[in-house]
Length: 161
Image 1 (cartoon, one colour):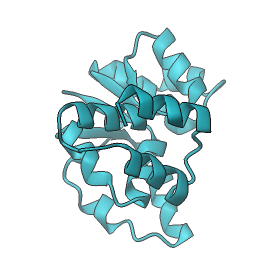
Image 2 (spheres, rainbow, N blue to C red):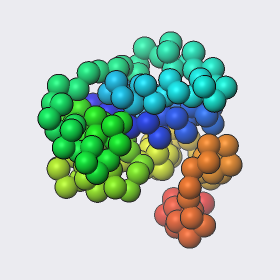
Image 3 (cartoon, rainbow, N blue to C red):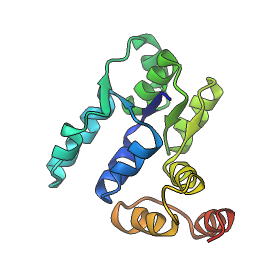
Image 4 (cartoon, rainbow, N blue to C red):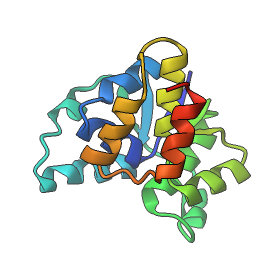
């Protein structure tokens, strides 16, 4: 399975100590260089990103279609733009992206998207994690991930928690 990721999911999973969960979903995750540069900025906020640097399953890849990236940057940030372009270039099974505008643009271009919560749901369905509530709480409380109370309750209801 080919998975390309934008910054938010990797950053949030890293900040909450749950990055390894993504490795259960996909044995290799491709990161465009702009996403890697955004992740490196975590060091300026006091995070030790050595876990990210040592990960042999997080692979930084240069995007070839710079014209598409430039076009996408009219509406999205560089990381999102490169992630969408890379997903298209590699024929990715999933683009891991949480931002609403980025997901909409990717979908309009025919790229299959999944978000951090979708990863948790898939892991629960495959019995890799027993519940997603602790992970949702961790996203909200430790990573500052916005999740409305209504959507939070809908997710828990959907997965029977």
